[in-house]
Amino acid sequence: MQERSRALAWLCVLALVLASCAARQPGDPLRPGFNLYSVDDDIEIGRMVSDQADEELDIVGDPALQDYIAELGRRLASDARTGPFPYTFALVRDDSINAFALPGGPIYIHTGLVAAAANEAQLAGVMAHEISHVALRHGTSQASRASLLQIPAILASEVLGQASVGAQAGQLGLSLGLSSVLLNYSRNAEREADALGARVMAEAGYDPIEMAAFFETLEAEGGARGPEFLASHPSPGNRTATVRAEIQTFPSSGPYTASTGRFGTIRQAVVRLNEGQ
Ligand code: ZN
Image (cartoon, rainbow, N blue to C red; front, side):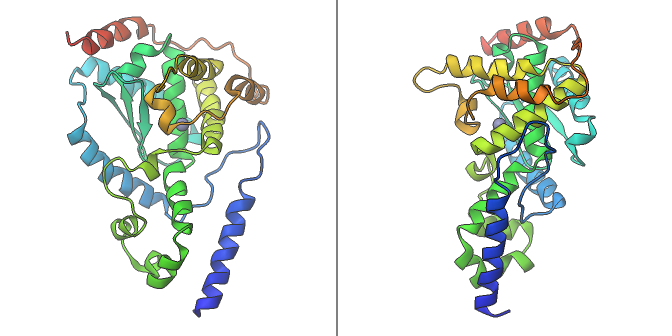
């Protein structure tokens, strides 16, 4: 292909990306957006990064705590809206209020976040929100958008057509480890993860408004630096109102009675871990 027609093709892609940014109405279907990677790439990238993360992070050794998180995650991820991803859930001993998802399914929850949640629905809400970032492929979508800013370099090397995922990731400036390109979301991605997360929560029997309530609590408690969670998940604003509008479009409005009945005990054990006991 000639240089000029290639450039034209990329301009078309750019136009499509911009068109996909049009405002979404509550209840509109949520689908993964523009992405240069395949679903299998997401899974492969997630595995590579999680292998490294598992070594670097302080994964909680208590099987009762890990089983609780995994069981909660599995219930949420059993919804068909969460896509074809092999989700895994790990509790990390870290008293900062944070949680993150890698492309393709690995999800990490900090003990600080469990300790900060007021009830199981709030924890389920953060997990449903993280699952939604995976299902909507926000990490690799953002990496794809970032790569559009490097169009001349990509045109020069035609790397996307030929190289392996690892080489592509290198070309796009993604280092292994917890890449900021993969983990820092736009406000639009946050709105989408709130909307899909609310639906996933509701289907599992948790009151979706608890997710918005938890995020607003974190924002209110922000202080000078704010919880780590808000650095990688910037507030789209008016979360409660947006989630309420979304809930209005759900086929059922509860009652939301899901609970394992174990949250209080689990939270106490997690608080003891955070206090070094
Ligand atoms: Zn988020």
